[in-house]
Image (cartoon, rainbow, N blue to C red):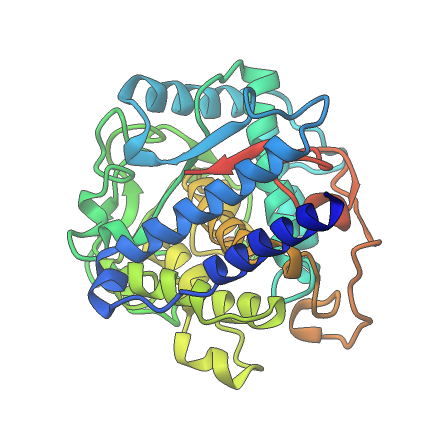
Length: 381
Ligand code: CU
Ligand code: CU
């Protein structure tokens, strides 16, 4: 009997292994987003099956949270989300000896600023941002009573119809606020490396029109000093279409056989010759489709409320990529400094990620799985 059972499970494994293989889709399915939907579904099913096989006391199939694209979240829930973010913007800052940060929302900006040199183009990029975004979600729930779905922004859905018309940025009460006011010449507050977008000035309507950015930019003499100003955006459909399309998103996942190349392709890390064709890549593409101040600021971009939707999508890509070959994709690659400058040792899954006083510390190895053995309990639909 045992032999038959083994044979059966071998056959099952074989079926699974072939189920992993077909990642070559017709080009039109890649461009339309159909392929991304399919691999997203496969990843979702894989994660749920793992959860069903290994439920924990804290995470089961019944309480797992499903993260959703912004436009697929009901209007009332989107309004609740904005309300919860506004609530975090009223809770006290948890950092001492800084003059600029005033709120719990700001504290996340301080944390990102302090860790930036270690968590971008390094071994820690994906797992740091996974814990960071999740901790933000956790604070929305525990400090501000949010009970809805956590959102992500799939940039590619707006690459042809225009970021300005996106349900994320259309300025309606169910959006994350509008574009910035059009300023002559465009590009106000954006990174000078990029062509200007269609706004550049202060957000004109919708949520966050009255939000005050309290500190930064990173070029200031004291970046953490109080420097109140409006939220500026410079929405840029051209950058979205060129670097963060559905095709770029899909092929970044399907053309990255290992973690080193996946994170390089995602960030456009030119140290990898294969990654150069992605240009600014989806990570930069999403950031600079928003741009402005502080959205275009490498250190302070989390002070832009849409940051968390953008990095939700980055984490979703990681989730999909991992779950397309789960057994092989629980590793880390790279060193512990940005672009290995200054030169540093390799990161390991035993390293501890310390995000005090904003959140709890974990070993990186505890952050690999979103459905168990970790602080997390979520999947992406
Ligand atoms: Cu970051
Ligand atoms: Cu980023």
